[in-house]
Length: 164
Image 1 (cartoon, rainbow, N blue to C red):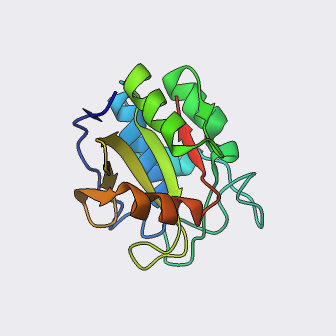
Image 2: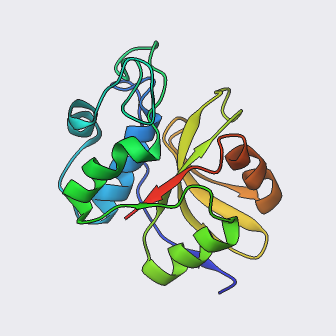
Image 3: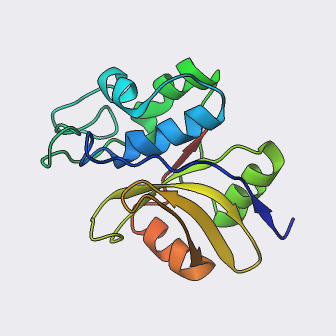
């Protein structure tokens, strides 16, 4: 399929979660899946860990000092609300596009060196032959990037991706 786009309302991470982009992007995805849950509730329910974002959120997303949480640490929470979770990390971008169009499920994407952040999360909502579409909870906008530029920022964070 050469073009596919979901219409998903953007949820702003601020003011409640200045460093909670991952859980805000996850909230957008889960609400689209039909879950009745919000970003603050999810931020309280997600796991926390002092040093390993693969096990839980490092820091506090309710402050400017939070760091990150990675897909492996969010799979149980996503499964709780969506019935299952699919860690798509490390897959080629073509596989993510195929997954999105085949399932109709948006994908939380971890990116690096974007919006002024070393680590950030976006919700991938679609694509065409040359562009990737996403929701950005920091700017509160639906955005797009040329596929090569999107791939670069995604590759900066080890091609991490999570859906349901």
